[in-house]
Image (tube, rainbow, N blue to C red; front, top):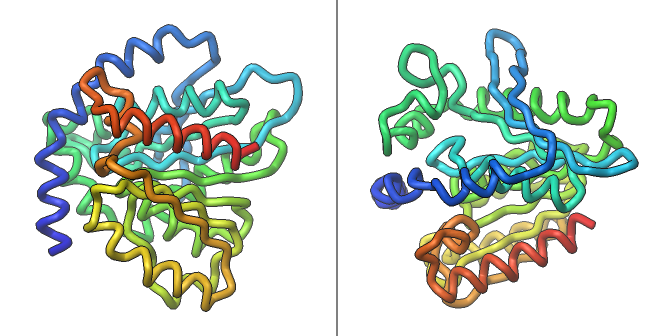
Amino acid sequence: MKRIAWIALLLLAPAASAQDWAKAALEKSPRHREWVTIKHDARAVETFVVYPEAKDKRPVVLIIHEIFGMTDWVQDLADQVAAAGFIAVAPDLLSGMGPNGGRTTDFPQGKAGEGINRLDPDQITADLNAVAGYGLKLPSSNGKLYVAGFCWGGKQTFRFATNRPDSSAAFFFYGDPPEKDAMARIKAHVYGFYAGLDNRINSTLDDTRDAMKAAGKTFEPVIYDGAGHGFMRAGEAPDATDANKKARADAWARWKTLLK
């Protein structure tokens, strides 16, 4: 069933990759942004970094992309996080995994998800640890780490919380939960953002809530009625439904409040 679900998501890839609206919004941003190469072991992880316009040191938000890889929308979202007052670091976890050793942009359109499904979990964790470490060592960082991810990245966010004890909070958008036994290692508060029309994910919610409670962990989920899977991206698109627009606006407001 999970394989069928991921295939269904991959069929949405062309629509997800057509994000000229996100690219146009990013190009208008006044904030400093840059690509950096973060090296660890034999890996080189291309990472998009955006700085807020702030007079003091700020927390770091590690952003984990969807199954579609590092898209224009992810970069625009990172800029929006910086606009809210946080240092955004968004790694392309397909770095070195694309054709000829490339990254997301080197995959044929709609094929990045196939590369995502071949990623080794230990490599993902090591990449995320390296990027988190880079962000926390930036001179403008105040040493506080938050993690947020979407779809496949939501799953990785929740899983990363089991492996990263110094993260202050994990913001988990419509992704699968980690193994129950791993939840005991979580130190961060975990906040869930669920789409009302996403039973594939929502059917795991009761068990997740029970397991987190049994482990003595903070878990606060919210379901956004009428929204579909991926509403944080789809709710910004020119063809967004009213339900996705509202869910995106409400979730964004909640997320910013929790961050602050």
